[in-house]
Length: 308
Image (cartoon, rainbow, N blue to C red; front, side, top):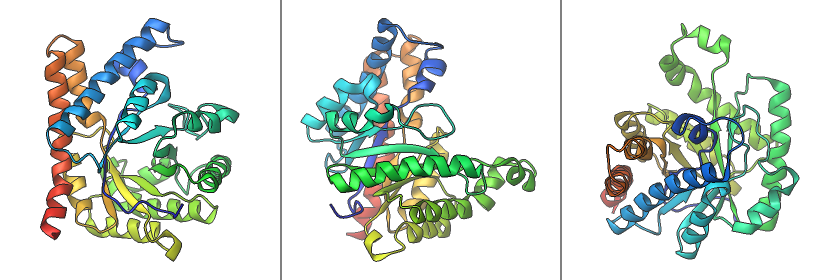
């Protein structure tokens, strides 16, 4: 299987686990069977919003979902049977250092669902804890090698570059300045370091960037050898408000190599909160999730229409 993914890809991610348990539902500790079922029911609302978006015009060949096995096994099976692009996470939820959700059994869980993409979320600052970076890179290379040798699942790498204390202090503690002035170069260095260590992503799922030139540098880094010429980049939402995400996507959409997005909480969080609080019906929540997702799809579809 050749490296990369040269097709447009519009992902609705709802593989959130820890944040669902603690922030959406307010639960801590081991879940009961009933609690697990309740989260699965909420995730079905999100999936129905995705299906409503497909019915409302989102192109099925470009649309995808990212959902976890724990709460979304039935959704993964349904989407795969329907010919929808599926993505499934391999990482433990809610910890700073990447490790496998299912430990040494990671391969069996991927084989059980055969998602289009195996996704990892990794916090990696090249100036961060060197020992932690080395340890998680070794695990990531193991996964990368296994996926590419097997040739049945693509590798989606979600890269977060959290600020180190000294980095944040250098911009006066201003996270917006960090995002604008420091994070883009750190993202480039992180991708280069991971590539040098043998971690080969088919898609880099990256935090939004405010400048087109920074987006171009990310693509150039992702595609810095002939073998990587078709590696794609997509923008994640990071839970930001609708306008901020819209701006990030519009900036990235103008850069060849950015093939789409993976925006989750901005699409579904408030509709789910309103539904659970009785402020909206299930049907209204589904429709609102579809509306928000379709709005982000339109940014990239309009770009491609303009090219045509």
